Image (cartoon, rainbow, N blue to C red; front, side, top):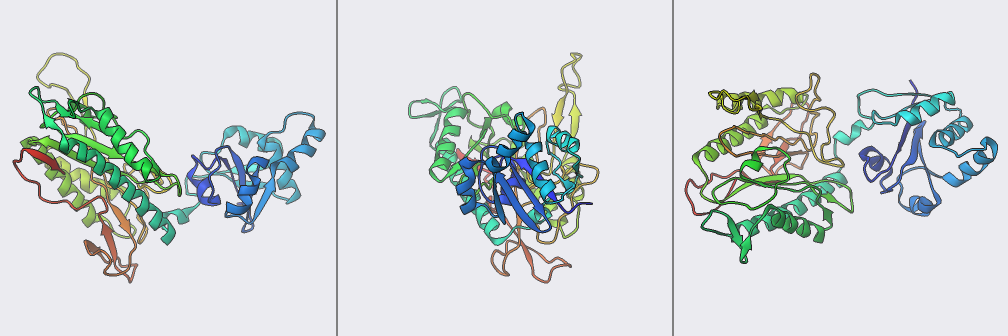
Length: 411
């Protein structure tokens, strides 16, 4: 197999390209690595900045390649033509590409006699082990996420309960849209952009990734799911909170306790070399023991009406880093990814959506390699590591919640 790596993408949206180059470029450009040396091909619009910012060995002008090609070919030059011209000079005949590489580019390169190939393994496996700078970037993104959540929770806490059960703030109804705007504005002030922030209450909270709309009500679960991207580094934060303004129902308490205990079960299961499916099954097994079964169930088993079934979902989700879902495979895949020693950022989430209760709660965790004694919340000594590894619950500790309070209850 060739030792040449080729990527054609923009670095605003493609995490691998941002990781490889270390700079944001909104339009697609070319990156390749051959015999340990890396290079990018960019337009004149970006070339001066690329020479200052890009973490590569060589910056090539796209214009200097395109101009002679247009004269020789007599038609508009495409990415494949540029890559082929560069590869011919360097005697490169094949290259590995990422799994999301454009089929159009691949076919064009094959027409030029350049073989491209890919597989389902990461092109940058080192992304799984975070460098100190990346850890700091993730922490920064998470602190910003915390600030956004705090702004939203403060609004809900300050609201009063109206006669009809709706929450009121400053003389008007408190809606999902108002809380979402407050969360997003708080994060913008700290240099992060929230996209599709979730503020979903009542029955809307049953549907994972439902953004939420309309009035928020008392005594019902309100899901706040916030996953901004830090504009400076490109790293994501991702946190979820379930809050209630008023009194939480007994059903909600039972579901909270199931999610909390599933968190602990996942923590006990994670160790170096274990695959994600094993962790996921430990979580799922606990849910099933508590009566929260995964799968689809009739909306009303006793009813003769053929209503669509309700989905009960439990998923142990991937990590956040340069991508908000930064993982090789989903946790339920047949051949899931293994946890590497001191790998960072696995995010364990659980969705419980019983038909009889409007509730969904997710607990997220971050596994980080730290210095001994830095954060002794949960200590796990891995056989393959001499140093201890700690689980840092940057999303907050799970404290015992009050059974009855006419205030805000935060899970």
